[in-house]
Image (cartoon, rainbow, N blue to C red; front, side):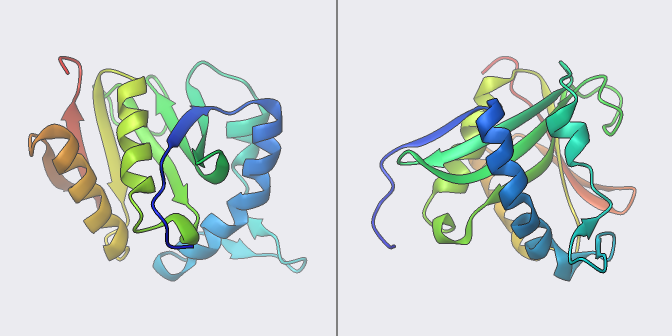
Length: 171
């Protein structure tokens, strides 16, 4: 699949979308596994710890599971936390907690377009974090956020993670 993607859509996950996300989530953890030892496989081949119930099974105005589609096909997902979401820095309104685009859609502008759409869905002070070892993710987010903000973002290291912070309130 090498053709251009005409349409990238991001929407809050419906019940059916949540089943889809649950099915593709292990692909995300597999892709993340070279950069962290936090997630392990149990004897059944299932990753643990399992935080999906927090995102998909317990509706909360503080968590936003989002499905990414490319030309109408499932292409990935994102989990956005909203303050006072417990796993984010005080003084920030939103956090990209998880972001995944299927390999077949990478380097085809789907991730960037999805990220920009997500930022446009929610206005305020954002934080995005990456594991320092995940160099492709660090490069991706610096590029995406730099493009989105015209370079007006902070880039630092906090608690061992690389963190970008920006405010799109006035955008």
